[in-house]
Image (tube, rainbow, N blue to C red; front, side):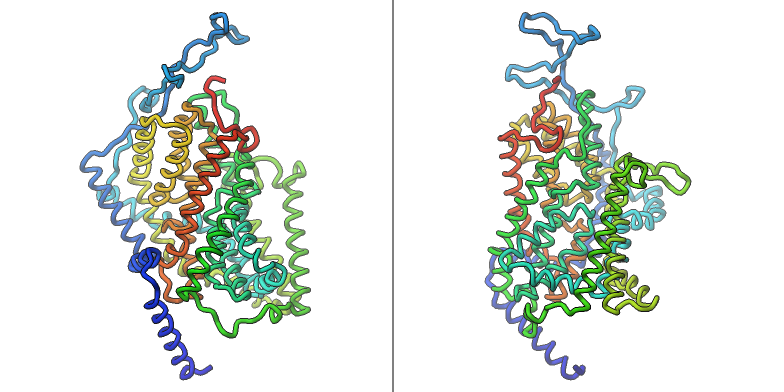
Length: 588
């Protein structure tokens, strides 16, 4: 179509969108959307947030803001038997138990941390508006960007994913799903897959939402509804899932060391400590996401005309696979199966590369600082993603004729990188903000202050669960990263909650909920930008406010339903996973 013929069509489309926008009822969702769309562009938001941290750090340093890290400490007495005689262990040492108050609760106090010399340890607000602070900002600018957790995953994953997309494997796979999945079951299938996508680290953010949008479009449903359902499953259901993943091992290690603060004999928290709860949670998230998508989001999108619905969209019959596409998918599936089987053998057979445990080393064979020993397979998830898409994509391209020359291969590799260039630019500014917040110490000061306040409240366990979920939710708006937040909060809350009867595994389960449900709407989620780009494909005027408004019902419903589910689980008392009771009895 020539430029002269396409311009009027584009103008007409924009006019139709404006008319639709003008006709929208003034609901509160729409008001939130208008406010959100008035926000600056994502890159500028992180520039502004960085400036706020710089100013607040200077104010805090000038005002001498400081806080002493604390830990809960119980009073212990020697245990006595039924006859009132002191109990000793097999080494004839007294058996100590927590001293109880008149209400039958352990007597616990908060004590400040000290160094080896017994001197109090304090966290002091560190200003960025000093000579050292300015030097740090300049000297760490590149490192703040390159060490962003999502950066390596996105880049490496997109090398393989982009090639598979370039050769058409995803398009054929979507059409196959469209023909195989009943229309009524499409939403729960998409959400459930998303809730289990964490096993592939964060790659689900990149793969599933665009796939779901195209699949909904093929079924003559609003593509943005599919995008929302997939994003809700991947981000909102991040803490659920049937399959243990690398993050579970990290959480288990931190939980073990945190539990030792009050009970050095507490058993090692397993990577499968929340496995039962996580598996059941993926079903809860599927049902909640199904309800929100089909009863709230999709009707609203149809009402407001929230996405482009081309009149020439293909029917399901027109999506039938061509013979060469069928052969390509069969070849791709066979290669993917071989990659997965080889990976499984490498994990299970003693002496093979991924069997057992290990710790990440640098090129000189020295352990990388900050890394913990863990299952070897958990440390190669990103390379697995790379190969599980690259090799099947190459097989598909060869069978369909899309891959014949080395230039085809290189172009396929470049394809994925080109699509994330805008994200890389925004990630640069986000990396500065996140690291500024850490450098100033304001993130840890906020965590310790909030933890001390909650400790002093002396509330019942169900209410503590709810408040902790809300605290983690609030933390998602000031500190990114599931693992980094847990590293700050766990040493405070796990010991504290153990001494009021909550097991470390229960605290971890509550943390998963709070960390997950806000992933859908917090600007600190770097993948929010990828979803926004995909959304603009179907609604070019969509902004950050549009996306947050779209996802807000999921966040609210997931938070309420998932928390109630955990409360019911606690009431029943069923283990959360392997060696993972919901309750902790100090001294036992």
